[in-house]
Image (tube, rainbow, N blue to C red):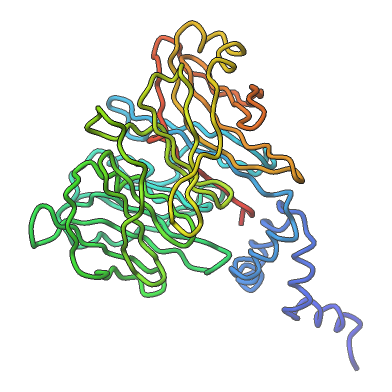
Length: 380
C-alpha cells in the first residue's frame, strides 16, 4: 500500500521541481537550504543555477569598490568598501581576515565578484595566492606560477560568457630582463600553462598589476607610449592605441584607468585639476579614444569647499549608470578628509552614502591604483 507521503517525497527528489522552488526563495533562506543536505547544496551551488537566480532576483545585486591601503606592521591591508548601487545587505564586509595566512593578505586584483589575493609581507618565492568571494568568505589557494618574478596577476572572468575564471600572470622570462612571459591558470585543469612566446617590454613603467578586464580582454597601460590588450579566449596579445603624451612631458600623467558598465575609461591629468579634465572612452572596435565627458572643476569647486580651498583631489572610480535614457554616470572623488561623488553629465555633486572616513591631515590617502571594483549578483 502506498504511503500518503510518497507525492511529497517525489517532489523533494525531483531536481527540476526543487530548482524551481529554490529560484523563488529569499536569499537568506536559500543559503540556509545549502546546509540541509549535500544534494541541495550541489543544486544551489551549480553555476547555471546561480546565474538564473541572479537574473530572477536583481534585488540582491550590489556594485561598488574596495579601497586598499597598507599600514606599517599590519598583516592585513586596510580595506574600505564603497557601495555604488544595490542592496546594503548584499555588500561584502571590508575584511580579508577569513583568509588564514601568517604572512598577511592583500588584494591583487578584482573582477566581477571575485578577488585575487595573495600573501602580503614576504618574498615572491614564499607568496601564496588565493581566489576568493568576499560575500561568502569562500577562498581557494592557487598553485604558485613557476617563475622568479611576478609583475602582475589579473583575473579574467565574465559570467555571461563562461562559468569559469582565468588567472593571467605576467612573469619574467629566461630570455632577458626585458622579456615577459604570460602564464594562465585554469580552475578546470588546476594547472598553470605558458601562453604564447615571451614578448619584449621596453617600457618599465607598465602597470601590469592594474589590468582591466573589458570586452573579453585584459588591458594594460603604462606611463609611456605602450599599451597592451590580451584576448583571453584566443590567447592573443596585441597593442592598443593611446593618446599622445602631451608635449613637454616625458611620461604619461595618469589620473584614472578603469571599466564600468561595459565601458573603458581613461583620464590623463597634465594640467592642474583646477583647469578641468576630460574623461575619455575607448571605442568598441579599438580604433581610438574619444572624449565622453569634460569635467569642469570650477563648477565642482563652487559646490565643494575642500576642493575650493585645497585644490587637491584624486579620482577613485567611475560608475557608468543609465536610468532610462538619462545618463546618471558619476565619479567618486577623494579630497583630504572626504569622499564625494560628482555627476558627470549634470556637473553636480551627489551625496555619497557611506560611513567611511579618513583623517584630513593625511592628505590624499587613496588613489585609483588602490581601488578594486567589485560587482556581485548573488551571495551564494
